[in-house]
Length: 252
Image 1 (cartoon, rainbow, N blue to C red):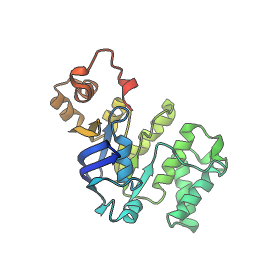
Image 2: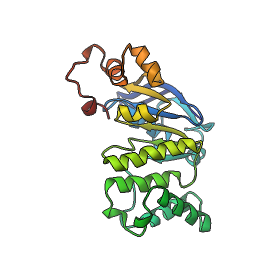
Image 3: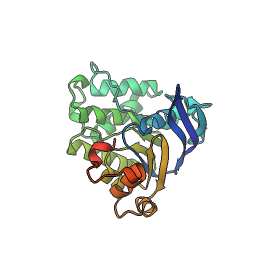
Image 4: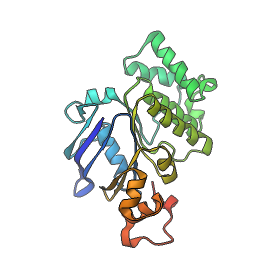
C-alpha cells in the first residue's frame, strides 16, 4: 500500500533524509521511530505530498507522490504535528468545511460528521469553537478530519505527543479500530511501549537513514537486545549509548 524506495530530501547542503526504503503492507500498522531530527516528519511530509523529494520514489495505493499528487491526497488521511483547525469555527463547522473540500456534501457529509464525533467522544462538544479546546480535543477533531473522506491509508505524525493518558488512549484505540476496518496506517511516535503495542512492524530512523525494519521481535534479534528500548538505543546510538541516556527525553 505504501512503497518507498531510495527516498532522499536535501535542504541546501544538509541531507535530512538519505536513501530511505521500506514498505507498509495493506491493512498493516507501521511505526516510524527515531530521535529528534532523525527525519521522521520530513519523510511523512514527502509521503503526504507537502514536500517534494530530492530523489527516490514513493507510491501510495499505487500512485506516485510526485507524478500523481492529487490521487495520492485522495487516498490518504493525514494528521500533521499541528492539527490545523480554524479556531473560530466549531468542531462540526471545521469538519463540514474540510468535508466539502474533499467533495462531500449533504446528508452523507452530515452522517459522517455525526458518526465520527460520537466515535471519538466529541459529540457533546460539536457546537463549541475549537479555539477553546484542549490539545487532546483538537487532536480528536483533526483525526476525524483525516478520516472523513474514508481514505484507505492514514499517515499520522506524532499523534499522541503531549496528550494526557485518556486522550492518548483514544488515539491508540482509533489506530487499532482503523486497522480493524482494513485501513493501512503509518505513524511516528515517541513512545516505544506504545509502538510495540499497536504496530505490526517498526522502522527505526536516525540521521536520516533507516537503521532497521521488522517486527519488534525481529528488531530485538538484529540488535542482540532483550527489549525494544535496548534495541532502539543500540541501533540509534551504538557505542555512544550510555546508561544515563533517557528514552523519553531522546525519542521524538
